[in-house]
Image 1 (tube, rainbow, N blue to C red):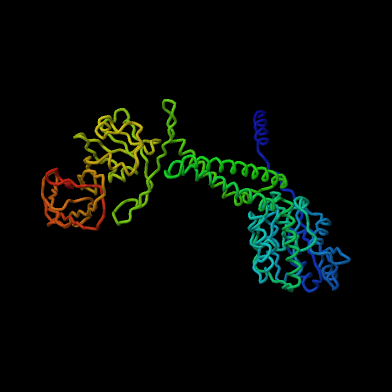
Image 2 (image 1 turned 90 degrees about the vertical axis):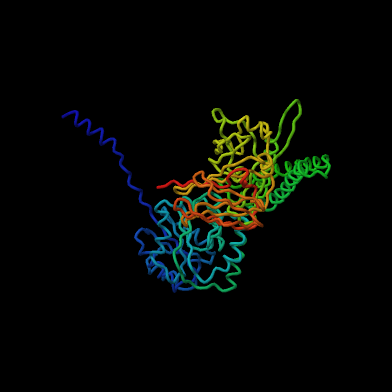
Length: 571
């Protein structure tokens, strides 16, 4: 019995008990200036929210019955002898509030509901954000659209709230202690900027439509001035003016230097009529300019980071530095390409860059890809036990009009086409006999445009499979594209395969079924003789269509073999 009690004690000790969440008190601050018509209704609505513990109305020097209406509704009222501005009223309420979470709500909202208030505060209670600001549908917003958003986008592009001047906020009190409250209408945007720069999590909450009094144009003018002043002062404080002005200039000059380096390298390798010495001078001058201004950019950026404690400037920095970063990447890619093409032999460094070919098919030939970038391809020796295989990248197969499992016949010897191994990108592996016959050496680099020349005259057996039917076409590789013709094979009224290639005018081409020659067709002015026949009860039809396509696949004529071999497996 004793051991059972001990075991039970250990089990109970091992069970983790979740500590009850500490109760978070909520204060709501309502700044009011001559709002006797609406302040009591706002207080009553807030009072209905179950988790609100304290309601403070800051009467900012009102000359009407705002104080009496707020008191009657059950709020704590703090009076300013004179009108000091919205920011000062919020600051007063913030200092007097004794709760953990503080919400700021305007006193002139006609259609405020408890759900709107809850939506603003609940994300903080649930730990989803440290500050929430609201967005809502309304008729006004002229100051936001014409002043706040353009300036924020210029100096603080990472801030992308729909309504940065919404006026309704909630936050943890300990977080608000880090923020500098403006004394006027700039308080809203000031809180947003400070929260962003200090890395405080802020969430924009949609509370639906609200209705309040439209401000007259004179008040909007004052509000706009105060909002502009706040954004500009914050931009100066946090080094954003420096980022836009000085850093912007340094970045532009760095891009000029990088562009000169790129231009010089391009001339060295690809422009023959410009003297090499001039190209080198351009590159050196560009390098000096680029290094100098990149250093200036780095120094200024460090200074700005120091002005932004705990700041998060990543998005802004990316937007400002993006053009320079792209230029650096382009230059690094060029340099890495040239380094990769460098060869050292007998005390001589030779740099011979090779580029890929951009292939664009303008006709309607049935190809898998009409636009591709291919090559260059490097020749290597076939791996052990693969003396009867040729491994080839997919791009090279597309150029030669072949695919995996096709067969190449080189000097009478058949080689099966296989795909490249992992890590062998752009490498063509050839057996020794094939390399000798094709006259290529190991490590030779072949442009995609030269691939057809290397394999010119090589015979190919190209396979198609459809159900129980296999079609094999025979052709030789031509080094020059010529006008070809499409054809489609139907067996028992079902399409088996489609292909295209070169048929010589006046030549005859044989078709076999199960290795028996059953039909010969003659090409005359790109048209063909009758191509319908029957074999063992199967209706076979070959339709030729001249579409002015070009191809390097030159089909074998009757004297060379069978152009098309069909194999029908009886089910």
